[in-house]
Structures are given as structure tokens and as C-alpha cells.
Length: 582
Image 1 (cartoon, rainbow, N blue to C red):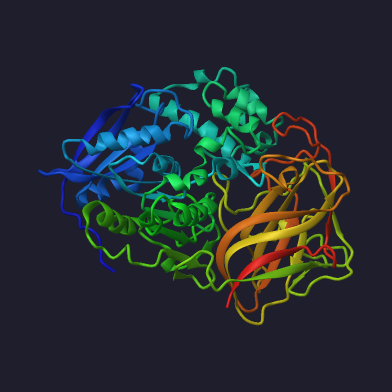
Image 2: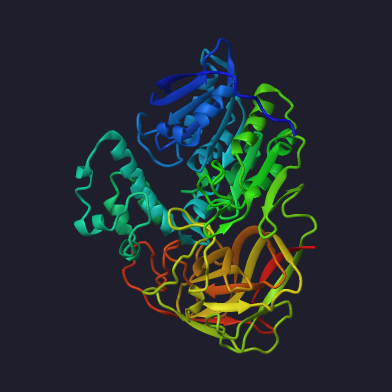
């Protein structure tokens, strides 16, 4: 494997350099470039968090020292840039204009690449369909591409756990940088102000507060989009202009997609990679997609060699990587014309947890995948891990249903997973599994190791006393010492069981089939371990509580309990479908 460019330049800095957008709005960037004569390729980063954040991740030093101009720009309406901030809506056009402006800088050679993580990755996805002539490649990390089904909702449930504190953080973030005090919060009642810990999870009282729309009203002057998000729970025309999955045929850009097994935007990296390989504008673009999937969570666990995992688990020394080393090889290839060998490498690199090994692949899912149902069984008392729930490959016959009561006043608490702001990653699930509103199905200890690599879903046959409710599912690895490691999980709001755009309420007591998407993983269940599936109706505050009334979730102030029934018999074979690799 060839290495990338080496550090050889001193760095020159220009602060607050203006670029004028097509509507006359000026966006300001800090520019870091080699302190040397000549022209160099540009790497562009655009973000809403303040261009000063470049110092947190080292891009402003790493790339200029290796012969690149690095342009770090405040997004529209953020910090030094003019205009009004509204997430994502203008990032495509503003990105296009900025790329072409950066390509014409006197020390630029006319070739631009884009990179960055999270919102910076979202800016790249929004930019790609606009096809600026000077843009040669992109390197999006941990980014969403479907802003209804990934950024804001999942399975129809609102992602309360990060959307609400994020909206508050964005306001406070700007206020602190501009030296503005709390006088911008005159509408915020003292009791609500006390519930806010800016940039961190809110207090339990804040997450439980109803209606949700109250938060949107309180933040209306500074975060108007929050009201729009809550007003548009259905997928539809509000979301489609920024849904990049709908625009793959308009993209002809080489892209290196990076995500991780406990990343909140994991699913979109996979969907975008596969969608572009199949549907990008040109064969060249289809063949120039790469995908890297590590064992991390969302926020830069791969930039400092302090951890090889996320949450409770350290996945070993091989789990850590300096992503800059991959990025410089990517940019050298596309922006400098240096054959670093990266193009010829297998298109997919992924980390298998349990084995703690990196592996290569040509396709996702893997061609050798054997999709295998593991069925739910019980004598009607699968409640808690001390119940009689069993998971096996044997199909059920005549078995009684399991029952539990879902009370929105006492939801199942979020304990790790693909979250953001609230605690992330691997957490021990045993305490949750003592709750009677959690059904637990556990396999016998494995006689030999079992590899699960690929997409996972639960097919659930269930009935509810409510007109609307949620069903959640979680796959867990139970070690011989009892530790219960969460692997993947998901949620399905009942009204969206058939369509994300056209909700339909339930007939109370009627049995429906639900498909709960648990996204994907690569995990080796070791010999002696057990597979476990948890079924419940809440995962709070990661997702908002279903109030079970069938009314508007965002404006509802009352709720009812729901009596839930999960069936597993010859006519209703509830199961988890696992991608087994042999």
C-alpha cells in the first residue's frame, strides 16, 4: 500500500476571506495553505459550528503541510457568514458557488476536493448532485443522506434524544462565540432553562415534557426548523429536495463514504454507497465509490489513539485508525494524480467485532450471505430475562402469545446504541432486561462461533389495544459472564408500518406484521455466547414516546397505556432475520 504525500511545507493562514454567493450573501472562510510559490489543489470543509473548530481535528495543519490549500468556511447564517441559517436547504447551491470560488483563488490549481464529518459530510452529499465543474472528489464521514428517515425520524419515530439538545446547542454555540448573553432567551421560562444543559443531554424532566411542540415555539426565533420538523412527520415534499437518495442519477463524483457500527448515520453511508454504485450518472462514478465501516460511534473516535471502541467495549488496537492517512491517499489520487493504489483496493473495508479484525469485500451485502430466521418461542411469559423466552432456528408451532403493557409515563430508557449526544455505543443491557415491558428471547449457548455480517431485520406479528403505538427490537450478545452487549436495534411506529408517507392507524386488537429495520453490523458471536432479542415499545429519550392515542404526536399532551400482544406460532412466525456468513 503506497503512502500519501509527506509533510514538507510551512503553513500560511488567511482569516475571514469572503466568498460571494449567487444571491449576494457573503460567506467567510479561513484559508490554510502552503507557504510556498506555486498553485495547489484545494480541500474544502463547510460547517455550521464555527471555522475555529478546524483546530480540534487538525485538518488545518495536516493537509497544507502536504501541499493542499484548505478552505474552512462558516455556513450561511453561522458565525462570521451572512444570511439566515436553516439546516441543509442552501448547502447545495452555497457549496457549488464556494467550490468554484475556491478553484479560482490565486494559489489554487483549479481542482477541489471536499471532506468533513457529520454536518460537514451532509454538506458534501448536498453538494454532489449540483456537479460543480471544479469538484473532483469527496470524502464524507458519518453523514446523513435521507433527512427524514435518518436525520430526524427513524421508523417514523422522532429522534428526540439528539434533535432537541442539538437545536438548543446550535443557538448557545453561536451566542457564546459572539459574546451574547442570555437576554436572547426572554421567552424561556425559568423552569425550562434549568432543564437545559447546553450541548449535552437534557434533564429527564425536559425530555418528558409535553407537548413537544412547546420546545419548537420556545426556539422559534433561533431554530425555526424544529417546528417544521415536528410539523412534517410524514415523508413527503418538504423532505424530498434534500433527500440525496432520490438524486443518485444526478451524481458523477468519486466518493469515499465512512461510517461505523454505532454511528447514528450508519445506514445512510451504506445506502448511499450502494445507490451510487448502481445509479450514479456514469460508469466511472459508479466504479469510484468506496465504503469504510468501523466499530466506533459518531464523533471522531478514529482521530486520536486513545480508544479502540465505543462505550464499554475496547475492540483492540487494530480498531483505531488515523483517518488522515486514508484521506491523503484519496486526495493525492484524485487531486494530484498520484497513484497511491487506493483506487485499486477492494471497494469495501469493514471491521468485524468479536473477532476484532478488518476485512475487505467487493459487495454489500456479502455475496456469500445466508439469511437465516431465528424464531421467537415461549409459553407466554417471555417478560424479563428471567422469563421463558427462547430464540432458535426451529419454527414455532402452537405457542401462546406474549403480553406486556407499554406505559408512556414509564418508557424503557435508552441504553447505548446508535445515538448522538445521549450516551452512545456499547452498554450492558441487563438492567433493562429486568423490566416486565421488555420481552426477552435467548438462544442456547453457541457450540461454535457464528458470524453475523450484513443487514438485519425483525419480522414481528403483534397486536395492540391502541390506535397507534411503537415496537422496538434489539439484538444482543450475551457473554458467559452474563454481560449483555447491544449489537443493533430499531423501531417501527405502527402508523407507518406500510408507508412512511401515508400513515394509517391500527384497528385495536388486530394482528399486524411489522418489519423493524435494525440496519446492519458485522459481529462474531463467540462459542459459549448466546444470541438474544429484546422486544418492547419504547427506547427513550432516543426516540419520542408514542402517546398511543393516534393523534398528533407533536401537539399531544395526554397519553394512554397500550396492551401489547406478540405472537409466535405456526401462522405468525415472529423472528429476527440474520445474515449468517459461513
